[in-house]
Length: 629
Image 1 (cartoon, rainbow, N blue to C red):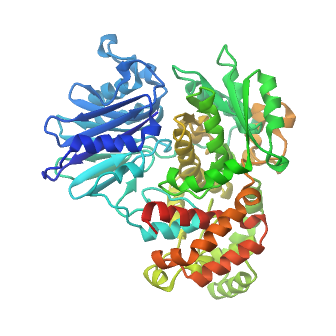
Image 2 (image 1 turned 90 degrees about the vertical axis):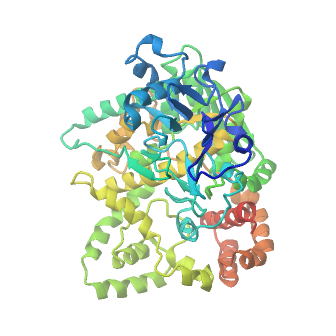
Image 3 (image 1 turned 180 degrees about the vertical axis):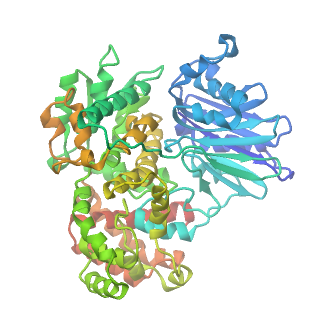
């Protein structure tokens, strides 16, 4: 786990102080790799690489990067879990180190860009191919490791974090208004969008090749590939679910430092701990979090139960009100690509605790709920879907009329169902839980709305729906929800926040449920086995009955929540009110009166409006930090 930087000058123009500029990029993401630093320049000085290292595999100086072998040089962020298997294809004398980094280099020299098809793990890397005078970049299939890039003034630059790119004087932060519009809906952004013009993030399962003349070729090398498992019995699927998860955990135990786990006492984290405990002779270090005098947000008793069951070395962090109030203003610094997700707060503190107790690698349960239909909201959608499909078939004028009356009644699920059917849109939008199109219409400025004529955030959902439609036939509505949950939420929310919050404390977070084989299998399991007799994640829970007790598997899901409104609601509301006029004036994006109306509704609303408050607060803090607004 590391941070990578670099730029490739295809313009022929002289760039002054290149190595100093790479050093500045490295320093900006020092938190990603405090153990070592490296800088490299090509012979012709057109390519410059920088690297910050967090030592996980081969802790010796032999793992120093950038690393050169033959005619190729690499900077690499991540872990290749099957690197020892790949090494067996080569002569034992081929390698000078015990690193997975060198394995990638040797594989690239043998197979070129096709090397990515053999890598099982999480990664983002760049390779300079001196023979071809070509830069090759790749990102892992599910997007565990970030990779940002831009081409400006004939210079291609890349980094693990956007903030590093801003150390280059020719790259200036400028708002991408189209991305901003979608962010208001999703509180996150799918690739290649970022909130900045001309700065992109590489899509998962994609690689780039940049030639010496500046041409960029982008190729998708991995996509979800479900199988037809409808003829499989429940017993067979239960067994295969367990086997896939067990193998995914085994892979993620690959490390030259001890591997710990976050433990909430819920199904997913408990399953990870149970399987980890079978792989090691020493107790697994586990980490849990609670909130001072907030029992409604506390799962510590369940975590302790699981810890005792598997004899883990257990650590707890009890967060105070002051700690949250102190942290909240710092979130915009961590997320230079914005993510308005309040669950980042507990993950920040539990990551901090893990690092304090000496852990560099920690496993998490991220991704299970999307793959196996773990949310009870999915059951509600399934109840409405038959009505939605019936309504889709009604004459257009009738749909429009009924939709208008439904919209006037508020933002109920039934109203949204009617509205989306009338617009010929898909019903399920995944994590689009922020501001609906009609709400944005009320608080965005007239000038911005004129520039945004014809925009609708459904275009984001529609792109995923098109990809889903290319999969094998016979897919159900629940299959669609799981697919969108994986493609949209897991990658752009859960894996992104895990990377940033883990790296904020220089620890590597690994997610076994995001194993590519497990992903393909889970998205192949028929919906009737994912949600059965009203039980979310039915097949997963059945598979885990051999290692976990009933009261852990089937207790009510609590979620990773935080007492944000109780502890920081007043502070956030005061900040928004104090800065509202100036913010609206400087950005030109918001209608002040409309935003005040939204704020009034938040003040009068219940806990369901907490997300709206957090989104507005976070946006204002983010604009101040990154766009001087």
